[in-house]
Image (cartoon, rainbow, N blue to C red; front, side, top):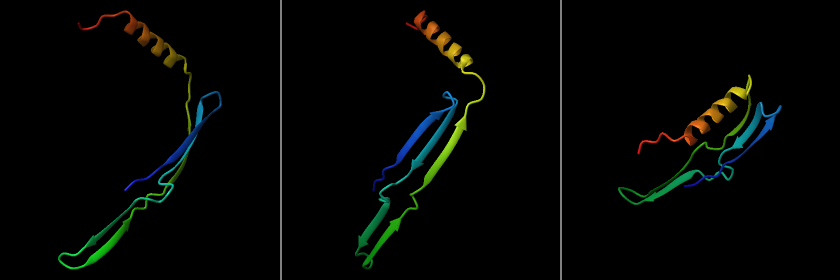
Length: 85
């Protein structure tokens, strides 16, 4: 059993918005089958409803300046040492 998905995203509005899309199980390969002889001969196949499509949009309100400052402070603290050993 295997499946392959495909997805992509694109940033909009000066990286404040993101448009994303994905499609699951593009080859419709999520299936399972069996053959049995005990206690009586039987065969069967099961197929999952695994093909799904998704389109989404997210928008980041506010400024990225606070994130940039926090990231800069974190990297400064890590470069100053203060390790355990």
